[in-house]
Length: 191
Image: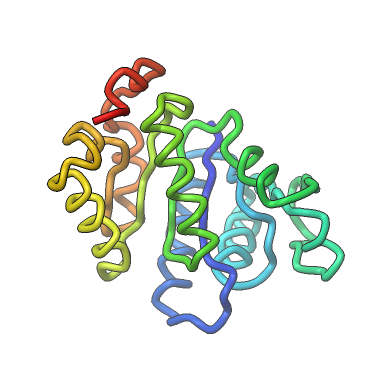
């Protein structure tokens, strides 16, 4: 099994996010998941990779060449895949994975999360999307999607595109119990 993890590159965030990320790494390694992530060496990205590797996990990084040139890439991964640009990175991150997990992050994490959400809405990505809502970090995003649904920009079925969890130990059960989704989602993508 292979899981993609979107997460922050900032090293200046609260320690609580690093602690939760280490617990995520532990859960994923214990469940024998290969971790695919953005390839960074600092922030939650570096924390995730370092903890998973220290536990004997397999970690694959997907990094644009321009980031490699400024030495943002992690040097000790199981495998590093260099790509031409951010668009290719996002495509490779979700290619052939069994689930996507979003940890707290900034605009890059949000962009990745919303792109995979959109692809799932259109039936182009069909795997579980799990959002780790540490201390309510993603509450406003969940409320925004609810408002979009309430205001008829999207359908009520689109609430099932992702699952929000509050604890790392809820991630694997959420993946296992995610509602089924397939390519036929395109039929109800429009409102």
